[in-house]
Image 1 (cartoon, protein in one colour):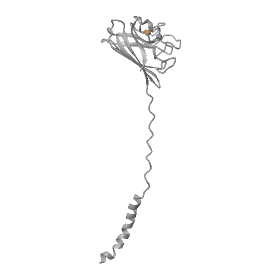
Image 2 (image 1 turned 30 degrees about the horizontal axis):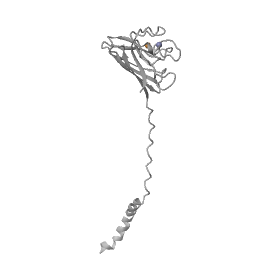
Image 3 (image 1 turned 180 degrees about the vertical axis):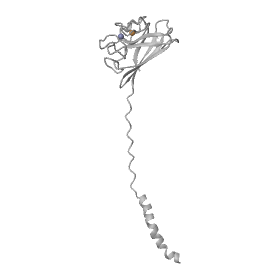
Image 4 (image 1 turned 60 degrees about the vertical axis):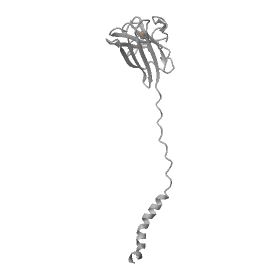
Amino acid sequence: MRLFKHAWILGLVLLPFMAACGGSKEAPPAPEPTPAPTPAPAPAPKVAMAEITGRAGSTVTGLVTFSETADGVEVTAKVSGLEGAGEHGFHLHQIGDCSAEDFTSAGGHFNPADQIHGGPSDADRHAGDLGNIQIGEDGTGGLSLSTKLLTVSPGPNSVVGRGVILHEKSDDLVSQPTGAAGSRIGCGVVQEG
Ligand code: CU
Ligand code: ZN
């Protein structure tokens, strides 16, 4: 009997806990989760490419990529099928036309600023002066450089619609107006990719 008599005390002790439980049920609904801010997508780099082909009967092939970044244009080139090791002048020429057998249809070096011929790191140079591609004993080689004188986007310095030319000889980076790089052994038309 004593147990029942004092049961109310137990109730008194438990009451705050029960209230707490009940309270949690009445908690206001959780606020709508605010969607995490989606980061602005990085703009897709503008890219243009040229497939190099050799003269009739030649095994020369290659691929040149122009990739526009905030810092200018990254130029990468890979060529193969050449005969032996050596340096070969490599330029962006004015016209994207490889129809002539000797590729003279591509015109002269791309030179929108009316500059003198030079090397890719000279302050005074044609925008199209990309220097030389070093070819190894296996007849392959490549080049990778960055230039602020070219764009892929439309404009006076855009590479799109122009021609890439690989030369027979080394560009001495000095002789005017072509670097004495000799005849043209590879040609490609730059197309937006
Ligand atoms: Cu050239
Ligand atoms: Zn030049």
